[in-house]
Amino acid sequence: QVQLVESGGGLVQAGGSLRLSCAASGRAFSTNTGGWFRQAPGKEREFVAGIRWLTGRPYYAESVKGRFTISRDNDKNTLYLQMNSLKPEDTAVYYCAAARPTTDFVSAPDYWGQGTRVTVSS
Image (cartoon, rainbow, N blue to C red; front, top):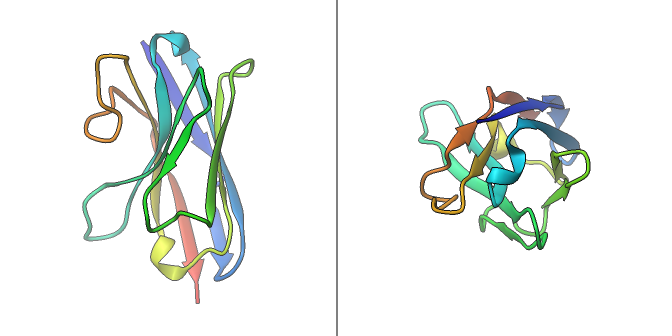
């Protein structure tokens, strides 16, 4: 089992920045991919960014590419999402997630955090 706990959400003005953190516990190394999803009011949950634990190879949704940066610290079992140039449309609950080697991360992560709310004002 893997437990994920997010932090760092809050209220920020458009153009500002936030850094989200996700602390993993349990069998963190049983997963090969970690990352972030988000869900805006009235919208379905969508993929934001993912990263391979071993290689650090990142990948992003087109909507955040160039503005968000995902990273990880394997020694601390922690994921990060640096969000710059935030827009009102980035407003959502952001969820940390992780996937086992046999599971596609983007399609169906195996583990989820509780979510942290990000609100971007105009």
